[in-house]
Amino acid sequence: MNTAETIIWSAAAGSMGLVVLLGAADALFSRSRASVQSLIYLTACWGFFLLLSGLAATLLPRPDASWLHTAQVLLGPMCGGLGTHGASQWLAAARRDRLTELGFRSASILCLTGGPLCLLLAPGWQLPASAALAILSLSVALWLAVRAAQQGDRLAWGLAAGCLLTLPLQLGLYWLALDTGRPSVLLQTGMQRHTGVVNPAGRYDDRCFVVLIESMHSPDWIRTMGLREASSLRRPLEISALSGERIRISADISVGMVHLTGAGRDVAQLLHEAEEMAMAARGMRSRAALLDEISRQAVPVENAQLGVSWNAMRSVRPHQARNGHGARPRKTPA
Image 1: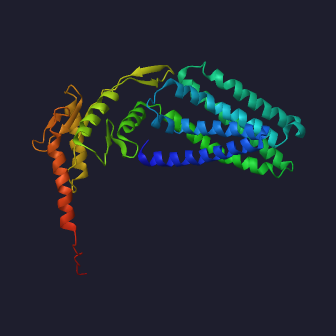
Image 2: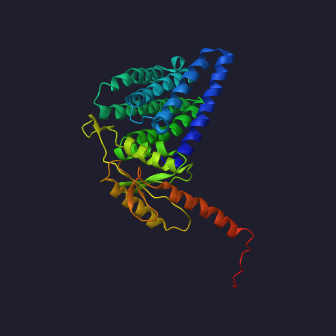
């Protein structure tokens, strides 16, 4: 998840969290059964959103923790069961007709009992089965709401519109959750966790990721970050194989670093140098290399003379500021 995606998902999670807080305030002051049920449903939907969007995995220290997968499997059907139960009360299904009551009750029971049963399946089929239950319950609620609206219940159109808008959002969240199980996504998430979510990160080519660190506090921080990245990304990752079996793999990771000492550098050349440093780091013990600004050679980051490039960078900025101060723009004849 890159910086822009993190900001967007965080803003959406914050807005949903505000709705949960309003529901908690309503439950606290009204103390009614309906308000408590609404609070439970809103909290479950908020957790469902955090888990399937990948935001929880981005912010937590262990993106491959087993409990995250278990929570993803359980929360979808749980939200579906609670949602269909609330929709049946909204439409007064018990007093409407037998088909409406039976449809809502069956969907709710199927989700609440089928969710835990999904954990008995092969690991690769657990989340798809959970998604099928959640989407089925939402589809049933949409069909019964439209049916009630056609029978003359005008308020049912609001419920139908809500279900119709929620369906593509739910499909998109499950698509994200099923896609983020790839090793490349897990590696990028782990890399950005150590460098900070505000620093842009992405895939450079089929075997290389790149991250831009925009601010550094000291030269020692460069060495610490390089060694930490190289060690943490080589830890085993747990993924789902094509057969559905959960397996652990270890990625052959090396880290290349280039210290940008001034503006005006060619971006393609800068990325090429970083990739060359990563390739050179594969033969080093620490698996982390830094481009030496003087010799233009790759050196192990633990042995690099960081003060040279650091002082060069600190001296360039005041010099550029003095040259640019008070300068007037030059007019170019048309």
